[in-house]
Amino acid sequence: MDLFPPAPFPTARPWAARLSPAGAPDVRVVSRAGATVVALPNRYSVTYLLLAPRAVAVVDVGSNADVPRVLEALRWLGRSPSEVRVVVASHLHCDHVMGIDALARELETPVAVGRAAFDAIRGGPPLRFPDHRDALHLVGGWVYQGLPSPSRSDWPDGPRFGFPNAPNPFQAELRSLKDGARIDGLPGWTVLETPGHADDAIALFHRRAGFLVTGDTVRNFLGGEWNPLQVDRASMQATIATLQELPVHTVFPGHGPVLEGKGVLRGLKVVGPWEP
Ligand SMILES: [Zn+2]
Image (spheres, rainbow, N blue to C red):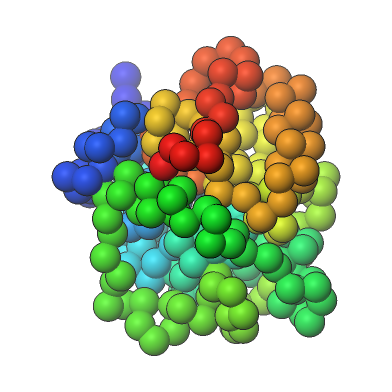
């Protein structure tokens, strides 16, 4: 028996996404051991909704065009917007955050970011972005994502979030998520700092369910791979080693379809420098 009626919105299937061996992601509801995650493929990345009996957390909203889709998803799931406790940014990259402040203001919830992002926004060490050597991976990701064109709704405020030297002018209340932090109202979920793809990258881990929401640390364009776009290769290696020790059964990547299976993280591909 299906828990929910069919999603009222089609999954975007742009032709270019068919070039990705993994294909375009679907709207998915995955439940295990009391935890539920909803995958909502959006314009530039996948938004995830973490559901608890009386609370919801939203992870990543890449575009202002995604905001109505998240609200529609809540209606579809029979959840009140007032149940959303927090909107989380897995890391401050534009394709994950341009709509995040708008959604948080609409829902009157705080935005939560990793400790490094919080510190950078408050004038601490700036976040590094991948350099030109990674341009091939950047272009490859854009093609596999389906060549998304910029949304008119993101102009002019969207580009103030998640770009190099962007001020990230959050108007919603901003909270910092340290390594080991819990998510308010969502029992079992823990924050992990996962630097490598970005200095401020975080993942959300539910041990009992074996769920890991990875942001861009993992992408799934080629069947499941560690993101080759990295600001710090040594940190990425340490992050990979740490994550591979965890009992993860289901990976919710920043881009592409959900990955499932025992030991799924040990099967992820390492992308070569000349592969997109
Ligand atoms: Zn990213």
